[in-house]
Length: 313
Image (tube, rainbow, N blue to C red; front, side, top):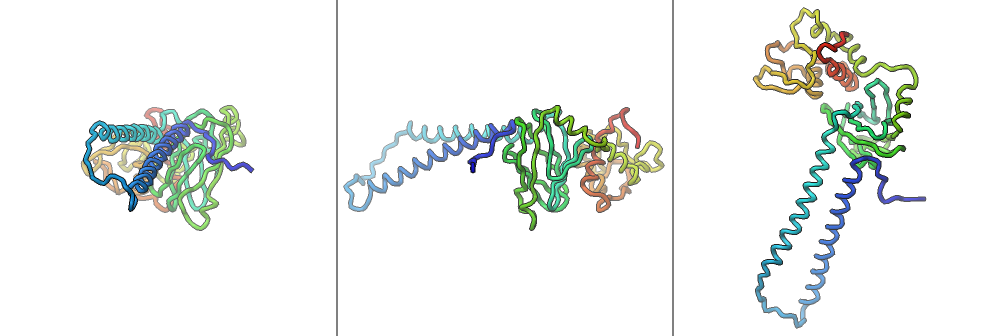
């Protein structure tokens, strides 16, 4: 039975994370060995009863002092800059990434692809394409950890967090919840299945064509009565949602915010928190009426409203 010390590397970030980790490990080992050697050496040399010179002669080898101060500092600053660069790369998904919605709840992971395909505790992705996960928790704090990708991200209630990766090898890779989230925490895991792009396309096409996330959001938009105020024939004066996503929004408090996923979610569940300038705070909250998966579908629909391309529900 094999027991690998490290999981295999299956994402574009894994090599960077491993390299920084092993460099820090080697440097730390050198420092530990050097300090331990010095402690033992001087402990023996100046032991009680030894004839070592204890005259406390003061020498100031300035060059040596500068070297052992500047050299380690330079090495660790370089590692810090490298690590920060990797960190920011992990936090900034490419613009062409395939977006997949993730809802964590006790004790399962729910994934929804843009085309509407839904999965629980298993995530199919194509190899060689950036994947962006938009994640939120429906109850407590969870944490998505994929060892083979060297990626780990907390998943919080009431807040969208993103994680992206580019899988480089086909196969099945375990993922876990690494945040203790309740009595069944240990069972909250699953598999990422990395497929060749053509196999992934065939997997998406299996079965009846599902309702896409944007289509599901458009249906909810009508069912929940949103179109009654924000639709083209609405009698109530409400902000226009066409082309809203990504744009600055003036607020009644005098400031501005950006219409990102966070803002859209808060506008649905906490409409009084950021009222658009020039409009009365009359929108009702949908908190408790719809789950996080439905909110993500509404957000997907609102993101799809791009000017003349808007599809009326």
